[in-house]
Image: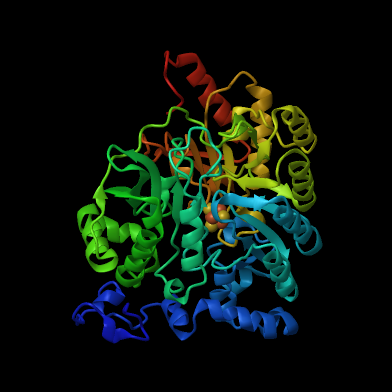
Amino acid sequence: MAATPQNPAASRRKVSRHRGEGQWAAGHFTPLNGNEQFKKDDDGLNVRTRIETIYSKRGFDSIDPNDLRGRMRWWGLYTQRRPGIDGGKTAVLEPEELDDSYFMLRVRIDGGRLTTEQLRVIGEISQEFARGTADITDRQNIQLHWIRIEDVPEIWNRLEAVGLSTTEACGDTPRAFLGSPVAGIAEDEIIDGTPALEEAHRRVVGNPAYSNLPRKFKTAISGSPLLDVAHEINDVAFVGVRHPELGPGFDLWVGGGLSTNPKLGVRLGAWVPLEDVPDVLEGVISIFRDYGYRRLRNRARLKFLVADWGPEKFRQVLQDEYLKRELADGPAPAEPVERWRDHVGVHRQKDGRYYVGFAPRVGRVDGATLTKIADLAAEHGSGRLRTTVEQKMIVLDVAEEQVASLTEGLRALDLIVEPSSFRRGTMACTGIEFCKLAIVETKARGAALIDELERRLPEFDEPLTINLNGCPNACARIQVADIGLKGQLVLDEDGQQVEGYQVHLGGALGLEAGFGRKVRGLKVTSAELPDYIERVLRRYLEQRESGERFAA
Ligand code: SF4
């Protein structure tokens, strides 16, 4: 039995006299910060009953502050930013001054797997309860805004009636599992991780054994040789490989994560067969729960434990204490042959049909568009869709003779199957429109940037990623973009503080993964952004050598 605050006797180690890092496995059960305290006081999952029976009936002002800014995240709910508060006030106002009485609601979409029926329901909820808002996130979820607490139970009813949920979409929990968007259909697939993803979901999501983790926990499973789930920056990742003797399975990575102190995941050198993935996932989550650092929130991600232990010790603890068996050694994944990993475009499936990936601008759609996408997918495919980790979408199972009609139907919705590099490669986080941590605008800025670069550089057709964040966090993965833009206030030429970005250049994912370099002193105002990027790309086009790819 695991050591928990309720069951400290199960601690595996002698209690230290020092508070240490707040690790449960070392017997440190006294909450060392406010978050640990509210989690100990009541499991985040329990807030659902209060939402259904009290808050939705009595309204926003009846919500306990520890639920409002804490436990409601366990059900995918964050208060959104009160409109009209500029970025200069983000750090100086109290949380309650930033809170609007409306919520962002994150719909959890494990593996990005959607049916047309599910997408239609999300689109209808968006139009009825969320002022038509809908953003596809870079973790394959869909987020809605302007949600009133009074409407949440009805929204859950409608989502759950079609097999969707918001369970543990946020909070210190196992968040939505990333999965290859083309699992089970891609011609080049090494192994289909879908059965493992489904079994892991059944065991883990909403399970109180894993609902009080030190912080969020991110999982990725993909058997695609394109390495299409950003596995390097997840807490745990299962990456498809062929073992020379044992056949197709997964290479195990742990400890990736961006935000402050970004770290790339490390390989444990272990090969995991499909049927063992749920056990191994549970083992890694359990290590995080039991040994993860809880004292300081900014050290409470698995990456810090992995950095301190190293991969050998981590594997040993996983095998000895949790799996009770040895894992086989295994090979590393191969370098993908393509730089685009988003599945945008028209691609043949292993069954001879096609999948069609398309690009909205920076993941922003709307409820009416989602229902129209669902209609198109039902008309042209078998009713299956996927979201990607690049804020894009895919319609599956399209007969060859239907591809042109689907492509045209999507184009009429401004969803492009053959987008420019700029539309394809630009992502933006939520930003100041709704996010309480934001300092600058991102979504509208990103969309306008795409249009401007398409106009100025129509000839540019190379893979390129431009990621915009509204603050120093990493929701849009700025550190691993070719051009990463970290939102902050900067000085304009008149010495006035205005919205702008610190520039990071040369980040990447894949086997050449690395963090972009913060270009010292290089900050651009939002107004200067198109000029700056145009200059950088023109210089690259003029000076590049044969075979060189864009990297600063
Ligand atoms: Fe909000 Fe910052 Fe995340 Fe953007 S990066 S969504 S501004 S916390």
